[in-house]
Image (cartoon, rainbow, N blue to C red):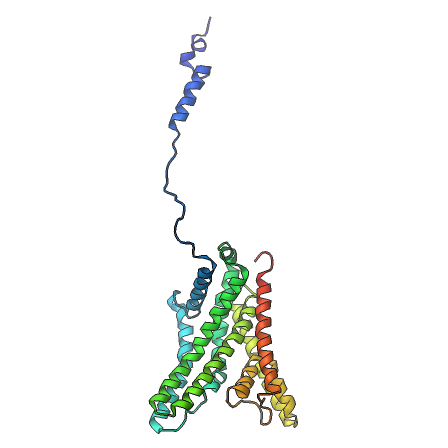
Length: 318
């Protein structure tokens, strides 16, 4: 018996006519939707704008701005601790009508190095360790930024943060001294010397701290490492200086000051910025000879740390 359904092309999809109808239906259901994507036709701001944005974002992060309230507590507390002695000195000068401030401008950062060291240890890993831990570095380099731009931006940002941290108390001292009617010329010279010392301090410590912090993606390890690098050599160099002084070798005691960032800064402000040092008597570097060595080592150490930091970010895979 013949199979009527098999013979009737109109009643089956298995025939050429059926396939054609099915394909026509499928083509009729196809749609191209315009979901609104458009090409960017605005201004192209380029690398310079990216660098400035990275510097601004990093400086804000160093003070906890734009982050959670918890992240602001320690930076602001340490800043208050830095400024508080300056306020006390100004108050003493106003009450006692002294002819000079209790502490030289150039000595302020050296005297409060423990507070500054703790702040630097908190700020440096926040700037670089978290980028390494969460692997956001490739996102930066997907923009017009290059590795040199990233390193320069981070160095600039941490230097600015440390400078602000150091210069604000000096500004309080300067304004207070003028209110106390101390000699304006002497105070201006002292204030400018203090600002110069703050610039050198910021550049040196920013380069060292960022290099150390970039070696680990763990923020806690970075904090501990920066504290160790800034404090252990300082106490070792200071102790060795006094041992050599007791042995009667003050010249060697002066050269030992080249072995730590803290004593380097103390020697520079004593040799070039008119301040006293904490060195043993007879070991103070002068503007020539030993003082020049302090200046050259400071510049060389800053440049070396910046170079090593750039090499760190040129490693493949970062």
